[in-house]
Length: 255
Image (cartoon, rainbow, N blue to C red; front, side, top):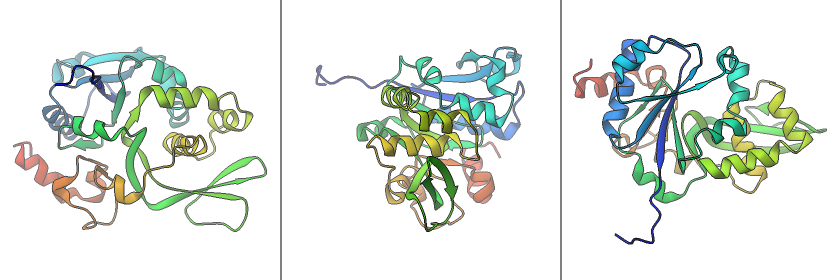
């Protein structure tokens, strides 16, 4: 091994406000961790959460506690994911792999790191369109004939890989802008993952094309458009392809 090559450090994180997970959620996470045995896993939890059940099911996992208010609502969690504070708490790691409880990873993630992605999330189908108009940002699933239009092909946050330091730096810069500060602090039906991808684009890091994202993470209503054997992970598989999730569970004797 070349001693001059920096070893990239990856952390896998799962946010939850629940002290007891469903059997399906437990099995998804067990499969994910089985495929990534050398990657440290953290639950991101509210300070007041009772941890005994989580510790019993995942004795090797660790916990990072945050203020309860970050988990009180979708809006609160949305804002939390857009703060530099979140990234500061994980700055010891080069990459953060967000794996929510409806996600499933079926391969070792570390080979992806050589691509040096700033942000990798599953493709949106259809793409998301954001329009800048009169100093505000609007989300549309189709193009609208005014303002500056931004097409975001990929970036679903439920299963996403982020470069910790780069996104921290861009969020820090963005919050100094009145435009971004307003968009981040005023929840207007634009989720944190969409805003993150948009901010990266505005700072010169375009979202990955769908054809690239589909090689790694999948969330889609359109089956047969990618090679299942090459994909590293899935988000919301129970919703979009329950038979495939059942097959994965069966292969691990977890059906």
